[in-house]
Image (cartoon, rainbow, N blue to C red; front, top):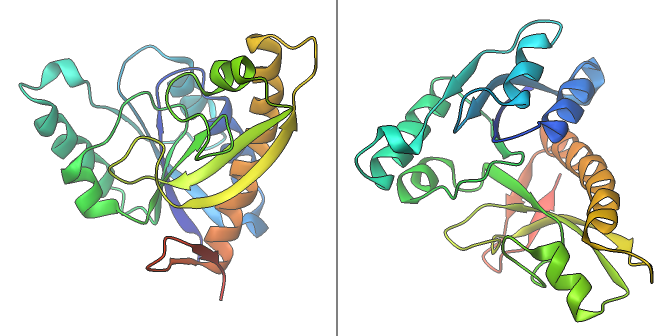
Length: 205
């Protein structure tokens, strides 16, 4: 049986598109059953609507709630309606909170454009470049209450060239990130996963 994916987005949706394309192959083992956003009018929602079988979408905006915790609860409710096996933050520019994690800890993953735990936060590419590293990369990890601090699922290295600026480096990282995300989600869907007490993740048995 295919794993059910809910994908959360905030922008262009290139990672979402990579997942939609991968799910078109029955052997991949997963299906995007819904796409959620924190804002209207973004390209990612258009990608969901343009899929071969239009994917249901929902939008939960922070500004429509009196507190951040109320928004967090509403986002969890919206996701839960689709009975997801995995929730994927694919360029989702909001931090989920306690109510969300109480329901989906160990089933929500995110990507980051650096090799965590190095260079967490909003400026991972810029910070790696400023530090002068010769190799950076991307990480797929399980979301927890920290910022880019959850258990690591997979990582891929990306070389830093002498003439790189933030834009050129980030573009190469995005290519690796999409491939890593698709591969990791597929393996989790087909083989399952577990997290040990020491935070080490194992995909498969």
